[in-house]
Length: 106
Image (cartoon, rainbow, N blue to C red):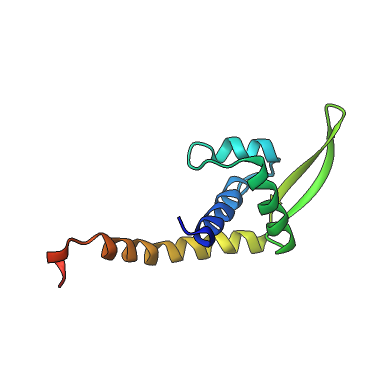
């Protein structure tokens, strides 16, 4: 898969994972794992990028004697998910065109 497309899809997956409640890294990986393979080394740069783009916020809190970062989606992040959903219809039309049999033109 094209690296830019994959990156965009992974960003949307992370936003979707925190859409309804704040979460932390390990939980995000568990939540997306039924749909896509994502390692910590992939996740944390995505989280930093999303934070710098103001699509999520982060707070630190102590958990079992250690600091844990919790991520929460912003209104801009929710808007990005809405845009993705609208764009997905176009992506599916392109997919259907690409998958057409040679004799199916018209």
